[in-house]
Amino acid sequence: NYVVQYVVGQKIKEATRSLAKNLQGHFENLSTNKFSSHLVEKFLKESDDEFVIKFIIDELVNKSNILMLLQDQYANFVIQSALDVAEEVSMFNLIVSVIEKNYQSLRNHPYGKRVVLHMNQLMREKQRGHHHYQFQHHI
Image (cartoon, rainbow, N blue to C red):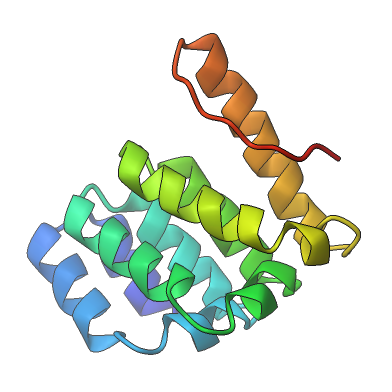
């Protein structure tokens, strides 16, 4: 885990891509573990590679059990990190749509509501920057 985090932190595009591809299909499980969730967050936050960021976000949000990830005590932080780095509107809107679809289950959940609150904060910041995002529900 620490070796992989070190390599990701070095920001060597080819190495980071190779590691991400080798971990394909495992990001869901990694996100729900106390220690390996930090690895997934590091991939998202420290990778300068748009491909890797999209790759991981796509794998996480297109899972049939995304609600479990949104409500998980560790994976909720991974999803919040994904929101932070989803600079492309298409990726940000994808995550927002998944959260909005699961809003009723998230709003009163101790970990799920953290994701909703974080998303709302980011959307307010983006609106101040004259971007036009809308989310219908507020906590």
